[in-house]
Image 1: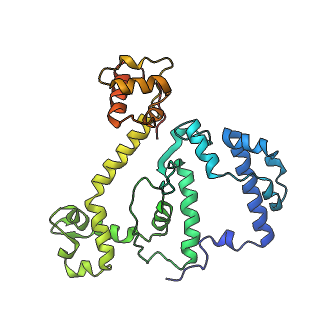
Image 2: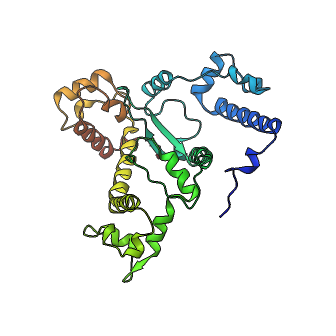
Image 3: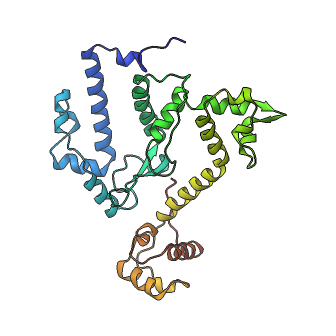
Length: 300
């Protein structure tokens, strides 16, 4: 099949002047939205003397203050869980991700909406298409899937380009004795090498190995994702002002003393206090819920 050289021919082949005009328009709209909806960035814009209407040409890009990782982390600490960067209501989020924390510092927590992921995957598509990948290709991702944001954007881009789903679709629509190949591979006793040669020959062994692993652990991954979602919601659970931690049966005396001294305003803050265990947080969460003291929570 013959494909275009470009992922997005309309935009990528615009004359330079028109492309720059489009970039400026989108940049100005983005800054206007940010200024109007993100307290964090509005504060930084004003401190730098920047207003979105100052964007007259792309050279004005230098007026926009650059955000540092340290500023982001400070915001997360001051206003858990996500700081005051958010430019929309948390109920619009569909993903909760973390950075890896390999620097030894607290991982950065990120909420993303459907539109965010559309943008992220689209940007990856430009790069992957430019590298020469096309829908008939099959991509093997050798990274661990978890809450670390990692290569999720690349994963969704490959799905968008049709690079990952071809084999999965084939497995779901190829039946052996009335059972789909995908369902067979979910069984503990069945491996991809047990499939008939005409099925196995449709993809390299390493790709079959990846698909088999994904299918067998699909239920566990979904369960873990749900647990992560519930954990994020629990961390946002508020603790009322003036709450008496001494009333909570089951808490250790040391835990009560630390909570009373720090006075955390949410379970997320309480969990970050040195010496406070997950068991302590669970007890406190259950007690607050039973007593009807849980405030309205954002849906992650």
